[in-house]
Image 1 (tube, rainbow, N blue to C red):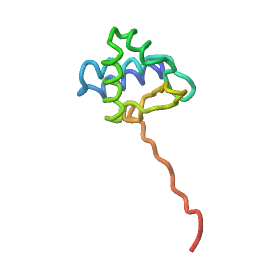
Image 2 (image 1 turned 135 degrees about the horizontal axis):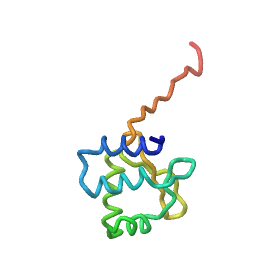
Image 3 (image 1 turned 180 degrees about the horizontal axis):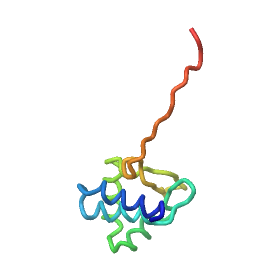
Length: 104
């Protein structure tokens, strides 16, 4: 199983408590081709059409996933926003080491 497939499988198992639409949108982000930052560089209208959802339903569902910590905004070009999986989706631990900047 490739790393991409393992990530998608992990997202699928972690998202068991979400609604059907939320899981559809989340899995689309988990399986879609991404750019170097992990963002899916496709507009919401295109993604909604791919799933057969109305654009308003897709956008509302994506907002719910962002609010729940499953997706995060990656980039913005004018009024177009692109999103990627958040660490909660993949189970990644994001740890930033702290350093002292001065001495007392």
